[in-house]
Amino acid sequence: MKHLFTLVTAFVLYYPSFAQQFLPGEVVMTNQKILNGTIAVDYATNTVIVQQEEKKFIYHASVIEQVITINGLRQLTIYKTFDHKSKGLFDRWERKFFEIVTFGKISLVKRGIDFADEEDGDGYTMYDWYLLEQGHLKEIRNFKKDVLPKMAGHLEEMETFINENNLWNLRNGDHIYQLVSYYNRLSQRLELTNPNGSI
Image (cartoon, rainbow, N blue to C red):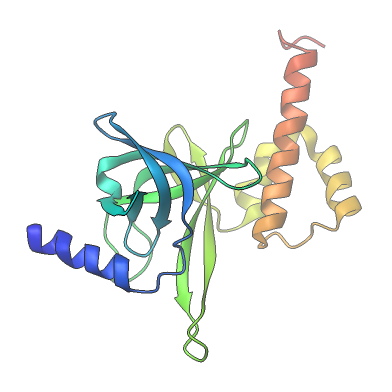
């Protein structure tokens, strides 16, 4: 186990992972211990790197409950860990990081996958999108089949919103985010105007 941790540490520190954007924040461990510092979540190795002064500490997702970072615009990003296995041939069940995108009537999370550009050495991140339902993840494979039926109470408003904002690409992550966020706002507004469910 010690050798494995050393190997992961070396990989994270010296491999040019594209997910390593260090931001101020805090890490909540599974034992409820809280760590503060500048933090980066690395999807490729399922680790979080915590930098405190000149020291770096690396923890696997299996010992992390939550990570919160804050950017220069004072915007929070929240990561939670869930047991997950992708459809990849060499993937396995283990605790992994997921970014919480929006909470509400429909809760949306995403997980990044890093890719290298062999020509210029740069990289990019693509995201898989999931619904969070009662603590379990459900991958969004087809937005019309997996998500739209959950918006049955506001289909007319959603259609107007899609048309007015040209949100027709339901494989586009930004479009998915905008649609779910708008639906959650509609649902919240209805709950505020009818707290007892009466019309």
